[in-house]
Amino acid sequence: MTLGADSPQPLLFRYEHLVRLNDAAVPVTPLSRSQVWEGLLGRVRFPERYDPLITALEVHFCHDGIWHRHYRRSGVEIKDRATAHEQSLVTFVTLSPAEFRSSTHAIALEEPSPGALFLRFTYDLRGSGKIPTEAEAGALRATYHQMDLEYVRRLRELALLKSGDPA
Image (cartoon, rainbow, N blue to C red; front, side):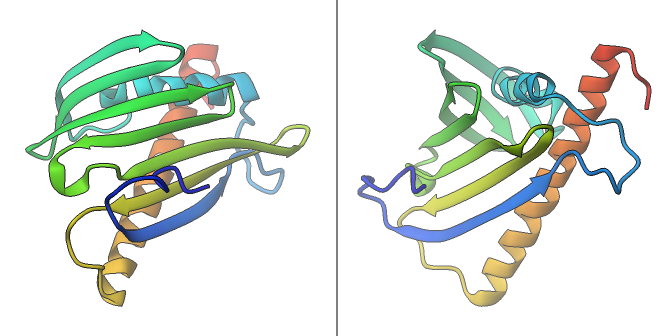
């Protein structure tokens, strides 16, 4: 899935990875599909709960599962459009800053067998800048992967607090 394939901005970097949520070999309380979906919607509507670097947030629901968001993250003003797709996918398209316009981030909820839940994170970095060197690309992959693991940890924490399970 290349969300910004029709973008005039060139693709500079792409990264995709899976995170397994429920694993019988790991002693954690399994999450339900509805808990994970609520966590994905939470990331759209209340991103500051999942990312402490987000400040000065405005979220506006438009229609048909589309939100326009304006926030500061680490001192950078960001505008994006977030879309929820049929309880299986959320997408984020950067509207500004201009150097990253049309960059996309997608999180797909996958369930290849009952209860086997995965999140597929996809990043398409677009812009007018240069293609990252291999070292820069490695650093980006490591940063995105760590950020996504932290998001899953926080999603699990909030889901279990809501359900009353302190796990």
